[in-house]
Image (cartoon, rainbow, N blue to C red; front, side, top):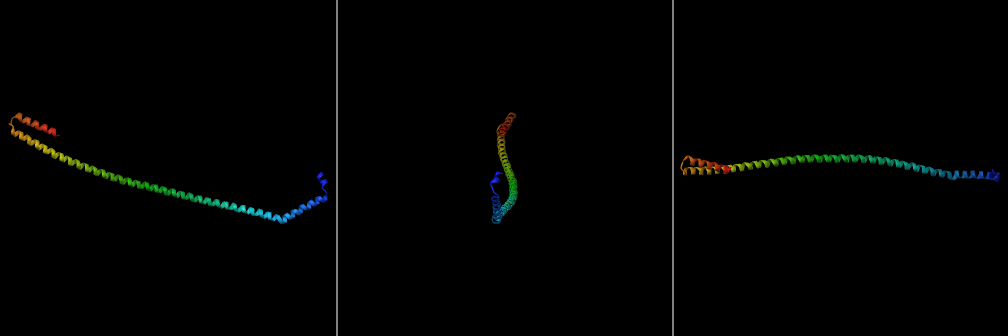
Length: 165
């Protein structure tokens, strides 16, 4: 209350009048500018938020497109892998068929070779048997024909046959 005693009524009235005059001047000259600045700032923030939302939507759209592309690429890759597997199976089957055919050719050649060798050995064996038979016949004719001599000739013939085998 001492504060009120120091001030006089005219000073208080001058203070009130100055305050209202200042308030009127601020309202009339600067208040609109300040409000306009605040409104502009508010609109700028609103537009920036709109841009941010638009950017978020664009990013979400791009993300969806990229995910779709990744799925498509994965499908393509799986398709190529499946195709490569199918081609590998075909090549594997062809190689097996070729290997089987080659094995059959080798077996056929080996059988033919064995047949040839067997026939060759048989011919040689026939020639040996003929030579032995002729030798035995020659021995029989040259020697005197008695039972002991005949037995020795046959035993010699059998022994020569066993040596050939």
